[in-house]
Image 1 (cartoon, rainbow, N blue to C red):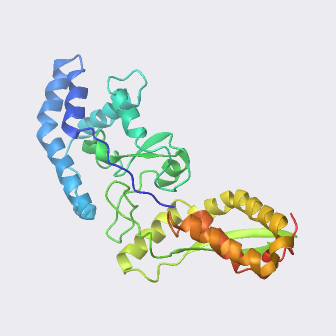
Image 2 (image 1 turned 60 degrees about the horizontal axis):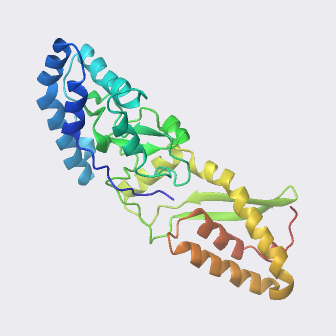
Length: 278
């Protein structure tokens, strides 16, 4: 369900310079212009490292607390503020995707700093450090930054998540008189680094639990299929129907909620023979 998205076309230099140009006080402009080489250079370095999966090597530039506050304020006052001079940049980046790439189903409502602006204030208005996300993912991710242990999230602009190898799984259980769909991930087929990142991403964003919450709609749909077709197809026919549905949904990604759910349903005898309660 994790998604890659097209990187925004906005340029870090242009966004930074435009924001700076709109400050009325020359003293503030001069200060931002003094910071400009380090800020823009850091933006280029961030992109170069991110393209190679090497953001762990990036160190924040050395700025005073006052400069840090001003760089963070630039984002809040110029991009986030609905009357901000660069609000169009915020909206343009937010519109890059309508679906949150961190979870794959939430509606995009805001931007997340992939590298937190509290640690990397110089990247506060760098477009490629701004990810369109849903509120829940943004809240759960918080100001988490990469650690040497490999605790960092997938960047939907630069990182690709395996889509041909199955790593998202589900099972159906009959609990308290009704079916329950539970998701989990298995990263044993991947190298240590990729496996750790995938596990961290899912754990920090509580994705398996959130997937289970969304599974209610999928369960209703699958139960309807059983009720409509069981008398005509029989148990084995329903099982094959679920397999066909898993294949159909899996053409997009085998690790989607629907593909995984239908495959789980095909493996559950009681579900396929209609021995469940709504």
